[in-house]
Every structure is written in structure tokens, then in C-alpha cells.
Length: 346
Image (tube, rainbow, N blue to C red; front, side, top):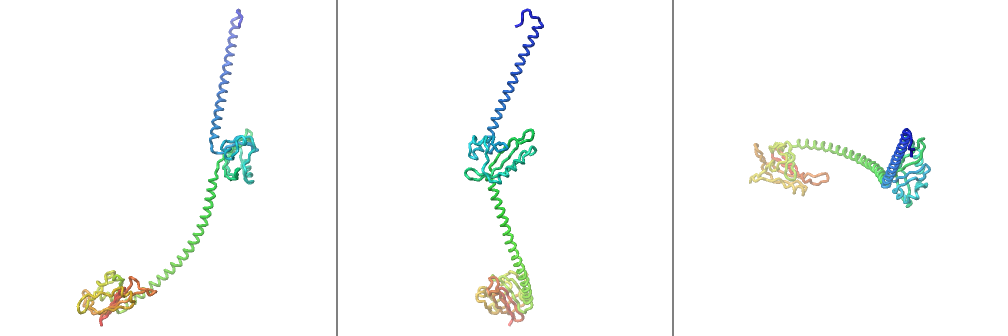
């Protein structure tokens, strides 16, 4: 307390000191509250971070350069079937082949302050003896001097993907072998096809030559010849047949034989039908009919004889659509093909 007779200057100085003390205490309280709030926020952030890490399905761990684990999450513990308390602060190295160990050491040594993050895949063996493939995203944690302090690793089990890739690779290899085999087969088949095409072309050329020779022969003979199929449709006439019937080839083609080659009995004037194709095909011998009168529009009537013969292939088999029928008249000869007629006037 101040003396009763204290001067005003002393009173003022005392009051200022008291106010300064109060303000200092207030500042200290505010600073304390800020530190406390910051710590609470840090604790909350760490709690949330741990909750996020623990909820991850990926394997997460932090370890020192010598391999001592500093932290592992539950997924890491479950994967290796080892409690967390037996993993943290211990030197743990999963079971793996020697070359996998060397690959990991080389990978971790490659991390620098410039390139602190890298990915690798390695194969590990579980306590059950099962092998699994893990893909690790590794980050190096360095101090201000650039010295490595810790590593943080996030691993994902990619065994199913790896197996699928191996199967796909084998499939591709098998497919390449199959393509090669099929290509060889196709090349061989193509060579055979080219040979067959060449033989077919040669045969067609010979056939065309033979056809032309036969056509010349047919045109040069004095008989009229008509070829018809087994249904009685005209397929061919030579020049003599055109002259006798009054039909040009283009007019007679596929017309009924009875319309092109109209023959009637010389006594009764009843139309005479050509020999039945079935008889020609079955006997294989020429079939003769009674002679008759050939009726041609715009021309005089002519007395003709008609006969028929089947057209056979190289195996001596009658074709269903290839019987011939020839016929004769007194001054010239006429014929009918594939139910064909040759004729002359006796």
C-alpha cells in the first residue's frame, strides 16, 4: 500500500506498474490459450490422420534406414498376421528371395531429395507359405541437410493382377504360335488353291477349245441338230436346224421342244412327241420314232425321221439335263439336242 502522504508522482508510477503487471499477465494467458488450442488442434489432426491411416486397405508403414519399423497400420499387421506391438520398434523383413532383397536395397538407395518418391513391385512369402506380389509406393524422408531419416511405404496387393498379366502373356505367346501355325497352313492352302486354280484354268481353256471345236463340227455337218434338257427345253440349235425349224437360236433357247420341232403323223396329222428323256437315259441307246411331217411357219412341209440319244459324261453317266434327240428330212438333216433330233428326208 502507498503511504498516506505519498506524492502524486509516486502514486502515478505505482498505478502504471500495476497496470503493466496486469497486461503482462493477460498476454501470458492469451499466449497459453493459443498454445493450448494449437496442441488440441494438433492432437485432433493426428487423431484424424491415424483414423484415416487405420481405415486404409493398403499396407502402410514407416521404417528407419536400418529397417526398424516405426509405425504400421492394421492392414499391414493383418496381411503378415503379426500383431502391431510385435512389429513396431522391431527389425522386420518379410520372407523373400535373395534377389528381391537386393532389388529393394537398390530401390531405396535410388531415392534422393530431388526424386524422393518411387514405385516397385516385389514378391514376398507369407507364414502360410503362400507367395504374394506387392506394389510399394516408397517415399524418402530427409532432414535439412539431405540425410535420409525414414522411409514411408504404402503397399498394395497386386497378386491377382500379376497372375492375370502372366496368363495374358502366355495367351499372347500361344496366340502368336497359333497365328504362325495358321499362317503356315493358310500359305500351304493358298499354294494348293493357286495350283488348283491353275489346273482349273487350264481345264477351262481346254474345255473352251473343245467346245469351240465341237461347235465348228456341229455347224459343219449336214444334219440338223437340236439339244434339249430332260425337261424338254431347247438348249442348242445348229445352222441346219435353224433353217429347218425357222427358229434362230436366240428365239428357240429354253422354249419347249414341241414348239420348235413340230412333227405330225403323215397320215393322221396328229402331233408326234419326241422320245421321252427317261427312255433315252435308261437305255443309253438311240431311240427312233416313226417318221412324220415337219411343220415350219412360212415354209413347205417336209418329211423327216427323228432319233434320240443320251449325252453322257466321262463316267458314261447320263446327265439329268443332257439328253439328245436328232431327226432327218429327205433333202437335209435336222437334229434335236439334249433330247436331240437328227432327220433327213428318205
